[in-house]
Image (cartoon, rainbow, N blue to C red; front, side, top):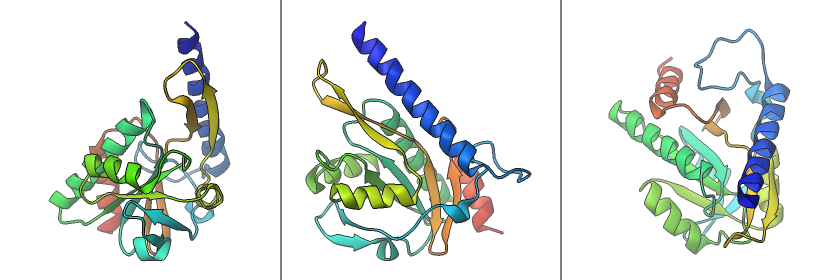
Amino acid sequence: MRKAVMGLVAAVFVGVAAMGLYLTLQKPDQPLSPAMVNADVSTIGGPFTLTDQTGKRVTSAELIKGPTLIYFGYTFCPDVCPVDVTVMADAVDLLAEKGLDVTPIFITVDPARDDPESMASYVEAMHPKMVGLTGTEAEIKQAADAYKVYYQRVNTPESQAGYLMNHTSFTYFVTPDGVKAVFRDGFPPEEMAGAIARMLNR
């Protein structure tokens, strides 16, 4: 019962945070795919330097050389992250079928547990092209703040993991020119891929 309550509380926190981001960034009178947040994307994003799954230090400029999808989560996430990252990976494959090359990036919000080795195992299982990024607490906070990502540790002593991370669950479509779109969770990869294809083929 207690675990169920904790799960409900976590879900409420994430929902409130997501709604807060949506209301903050909402930009009226802009027709978009239902999968996309109606956001002023000029206010989102920024440079970062993190460590990839091989242990190499990399900058956002080195990584974002073409169309890119970015998701903030963590490898111990029991539910939301695996679903959202799978959608991102599937969208990348659907775009590849259209001849569009998009790189998926997974950035942890739990650097205390997500070292490069953990990230390597995770992204390898998710997609062969996926890049996994970790760093210090300060480096992760800088990247998360730039992308308006909410995250917070929630202790769960009754669980094997010891704690969970509440976090917003948006996927960001980025090019070297900046963030182009923000996608909500809960939509099929076809929606994401279709919206991105339309943007790239304009």
